[in-house]
Figure 1 (cartoon, rainbow, N blue to C red):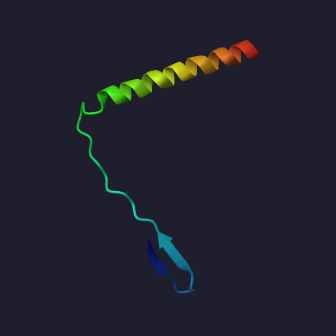
Figure 2: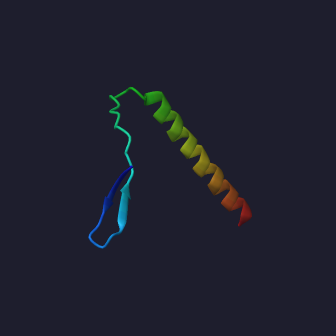
Amino acid sequence: MQVTEEDGGKLNAFAREPRMVVIEKGEANGQSRLLLIGGVVLVVVLVAVAAGIS
């Protein structure tokens, strides 16, 4: 962690950020499709539960 001191004596701590990883197009296609399908199923289930309660 990088710590700096201001003029008033306060300390500021800055976290170390992880390196960015660039994903090439089509590399994570199956994983993103699974996440999309899971989100759609979750929304449908929540709408069904809300309709059942009301």
